[in-house]
Length: 261
Image (cartoon, rainbow, N blue to C red; front, side, top):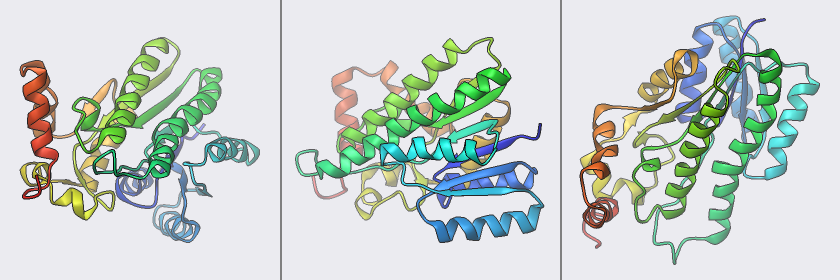
């Protein structure tokens, strides 16, 4: 059976770049995002350039019912998803007391609930086939929760914990769960406020294509988690050698805007 890879958040950033790379390797794709016109543009481009099959589904995965609808529609269309990339996600930067509650609740649905839902549903079919691969996109902040990213950091810590424990449960099943943990990435994810932080000056965002290349390698052949880039790996390990109180002060300084705090 030919592999078919489902990617959420596939119209931009890491998801789009992964789709391009996987298409060049002749994998059939299922691409999911909110923008139907952009999805169909990508479908046409990849099918014409690489002679593959691309299925597209316009879904807002911040709506908890749409993740379930996605699975049902994929099954109804007779598509056997052999690999799943839970890439869709969003972030909010700012003082928690001032950020928008509804936006944060939608972020929790997208970053956590949709990951759990899609993993739960598609993994059942993988278990029956005794083969499959799932890659969840977490973050450097999974290891290093930053002030002013309080809810986002928590969602990505969940993704990492969920992925690692699920991977342990599935040992010997033929199904592999991995976690991609990028640091800052140069995508539309970043707001003007994020670009002004000390962290972005000290640790320049990587091109999405660089992160996607390592993501594809992890998805197809890897195990465990992958922190993208030596600087990010080093930063992720600082809490092991730095007292908690000092570490949080460092993180607060990094997450602050250059001249505002």
